[in-house]
Amino acid sequence: MLTKEALNFLKGKSFINVATCGEGLRPNVAPKFLLKIENNYIYLIDYVRNTTLKNIEINSKVSISSINLDTLKGYQVNGLAEIIKKERKSIYKALLEEYEQKQIDLSTRRLIEALHDQKKSSNYEAEFPKRVAIIKIKVTEAVGISLQGNLERENF
Image 1 (cartoon, one colour):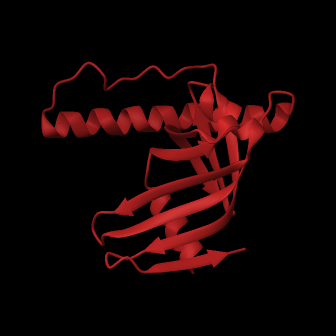
Image 2: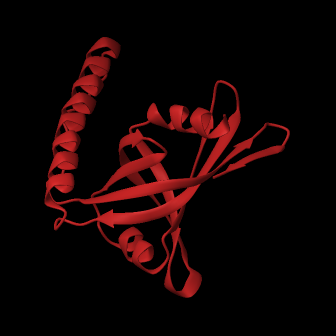
């Protein structure tokens, strides 16, 4: 199943690029923190809370793309996005708690890898923003793109 394959590949990422298009049909692509993927839904954290959110309010269609460098197979995942508002307290709070744990996990993993590889940087222990927006994307289509340019589509 292509959708499962694409989502499993994305699960290994910490950040993914999300394309939106809003008023005036001006495209926007921006990196977002990948919170989790669950039951054909992708949950993202938006730190900037600007163009992407404005675009989603106008046009809920979004697209995510990535490529597996091992296989050179590309993936495009399309869907419909919604912004999870603070008014939905129990859902919002639970997702924020997951976000806080994922921040710790990411910082820990990066620090351990840096020590192992003897890298020097001041950015391994990141302080993530507290004021964020949570985006929920319902996946509606997955596209597999072969190195030869063949497309495989799965809609639902």
